[in-house]
Length: 541
Image 1 (cartoon, rainbow, N blue to C red):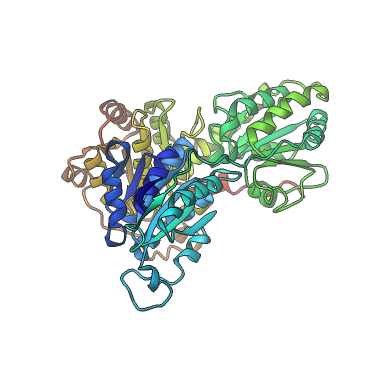
Image 2 (spheres, rainbow, N blue to C red; image 1 turned 90 degrees about the vertical axis):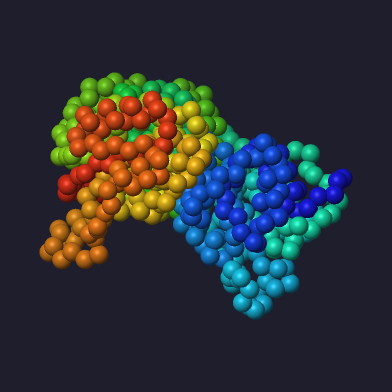
């Protein structure tokens, strides 16, 4: 046992669990914690952005790209609240992001004396968007609460965690026995009977279909092999992109999956909320559904499936690979059928110009292992529909929260965690202003993210809806914008302007080769609506 402060014990525990970077902004409530960060020396890197929202978005990006836990630190009250959009996003996309925040003095909590940054029930607020939330009340608790938080965050369905510490506890000293190693994660055993029931259904299926989401990221090889065994097309939408490579003959985009839905007889849904298909595309008695999800509450959340497989996607996919051959019937190749479907869909996508042309240019310039960070913009909606992705964790999207402006800070976190990978962030001029100040962070920390700002001087989607649904009564949707090239240059960031897809491709190729922070401004007019391809009609039930 050694004498340590609460802050020192917490930092030592972070390092023990492999967390060597903290995204944070200091303040009075966390002064002893940041001093402990400093004294950790080269073992711990602290990256300080310019706004609390970016601390959490950067941690989110690093977690989504690596699949490993990440930490950020902010002051309590307004600092914590500034970060909660990203924390809520982490909850929605199942990312292990740990928030470390301060508190007012221990004796003052919940007494409402009006202390600096005092907030009512901060711990309770955090509990609504995390899987684990606790207060550190004494030095000896710190390493064990870090251990417990990470064990809960990483076991089962991964989600964020939260630890707060009163400002007068951070610096308290005590003899502390540190955990010798991280706690073992809880692991759900494979249910052999459920595997057998699923294998029988899949083996007897004539037109099986597989739907994958973000929970399938670690099982790509097994799912690809299972798809080939079953001759089953694999549908991905947003977070499932890259689980099976887009170039694989059985990989299909979301609208192509909709076209196959009506004639499917068995669907295997892996690591996906599966809500869109069940609620919008429809189900009936002739469709047998198998749900594979690590969260026991998820399979029957909307409709009770024929079989529920609860556990790790890779474990169950491997188990199905072993059992399906005993029941598998013969099927004709679907290669020609899917080739015709792709030809039809290419014609549908061709209506999304200029979005498609620019996305093709990005795909040609971005290395196959480069990471594309989506954004809530017309270009982002089109990317979800037609951007090919060959590897898991290379297409990052905000999931059902769809936080406008999430992208640039998230991309900076990706680059901080994976400096050798090309990282591209797309943005609309509206959403980019959520985190435009982080151009300074990119420059200061030399984070070579390339951001492409598609500028139509408006909230393009809002304006499109107001035009089509409200008779063109436009309100609160138009902007006065700066010269984005001059703006970037004022931060000593490489800046370019591209007005055609070919110009964009050449510019991106150079920017990725230079591997320095860069901004590309793309003036763009009104874009055609993607919603007819996203919101597909009911075809069953």
